[in-house]
Image 1 (cartoon, rainbow, N blue to C red):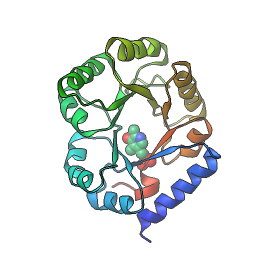
Image 2: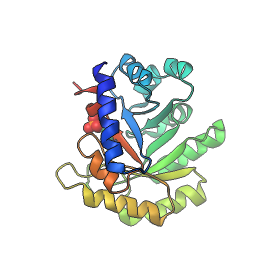
Image 3: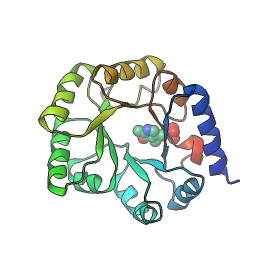
Image 4: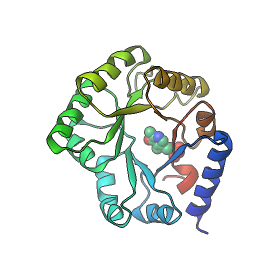
Length: 216
Ligand SMILES: *Cc1c(COP(=O)(O)O)cnc(C)c1O
């Protein structure tokens, strides 16, 4: 077995142990890894992938999509409005809607193209000034804007907790907010903390290095 296959199996069994029978989707974060690594993961049955840059994903995935029509691609990095057209064309889920202007640009592009990838609102649970995302206090207004005013296919919430804090309270807050708004998707947890995220109610975990090895 390849290292990637072994890594995938290990992560899957750790998720299963933490989920105790509840379904949790593994988003394999393939940013910086070559198409060859993705192909290996696909051969091992993985179909859901996360990339954080539109251009990089655009270069790596079209060929893979032809081979694997059931591939599901998530954008997990910041999105500039000038990349919205490419993002709506390429991704199945945009996890990083973090400001009204971006939500409007995505809605306009959906209208124009007829493509409707699901979207998640990124929440800055730690109110970190350098981090993207809607503050918890502004979330009600952002949900109303996305769902009611722009008519976006809003599926859930995502967060990246502060690196130097216990992530559990942040995960709990995100899961509570999603529940309060009737949103089914809760995307949280990375290589270092995905089991905690699953225990706190993640429906999707975004795991890169624990599968593919360290990024250089
Ligand atoms: C890179 C990245 C991940 C995966 O990080 P790992 O620590 O390699 O698992 C998850 N989410 C986001 C938003 C990322 O940018």
